Image (cartoon, rainbow, N blue to C red; front, side, top):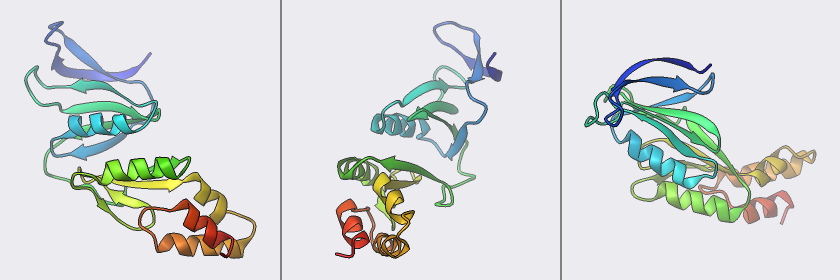
Length: 175
């Protein structure tokens, strides 16, 4: 039986009170000051196995209060709660990437239209949410048994904005 609580959204099509259902025990909530539905739609367009699951509105013509969605199967929700809280890099969405092409695609999409680069594979998107776009190859390098090679890869990473797998591998191999 899904965990839920009564929610006062009236479905325009069905004219009844909906139950806001939680399909998982834990769901990360991101606080937005508007544009939450737009952000969720953008985020799910970036990653496979992602979808907007539900949009809850206080009334049929009101902006959404809660948007439930998944990113690569991980559950999230956005609460359009007003200007009381701002996003911070202390919370970020970390995405491991298979190769440089995926790293480049996500980086370009997330930094476009007002997003901004940070350091070491971190960025802030147009909505103010922090992301880490991290090639899977980096973990193999920095956790390698050869600690000197791992240190070179980590030092190279510290100088980068978007992570460059070829440059990380060159540093790892001492080239």
